[in-house]
Length: 219
Image 1: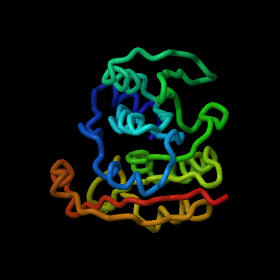
Image 2: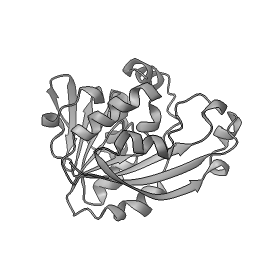
Image 3: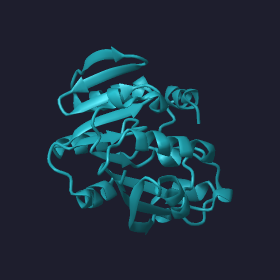
Image 4: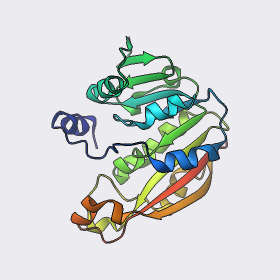
């Protein structure tokens, strides 16, 4: 999916992929990463996720990236704060203590712009991308991390023939293929969520599993 695809969806208000509350799996499994207070967390393709505010409130320093300026405005609007604004290359940067939002194309982000990354939270980034874009995403994400960086990755598994994404199905074998050369991968949980997601049943899906992984950058 190109940046223009997502900008058009935001312009039309088609952002039903956002949860109204903090992801319960984030609250349950984030402590498994054993990150110190103040660790720097990257959230790619963040949208207006309320998980950003939760991570910040837990004492982490968050850097979010999304192509939509509407997403950034929604995040700070929900917090009721006015961010400082600056410009760095092709990115507009909105910032308050504990949270920076980089508005621009994730694939154009550099390590110098993003800064230190101790952890990554990916709830809906990998599964938002079609198969041909996922290797580039994995390479970009890996390149922004140093050795030892940890990640919580949330993926969907379903029969791709039953529904066109996004969100796309990304099965465990593909996660290993994308990240196995650069990360140690631990499967944390798999949860049948079809009954919680009637909109997907309405789109023709007969089984839907949410799978969580912990990753550690090894080299």
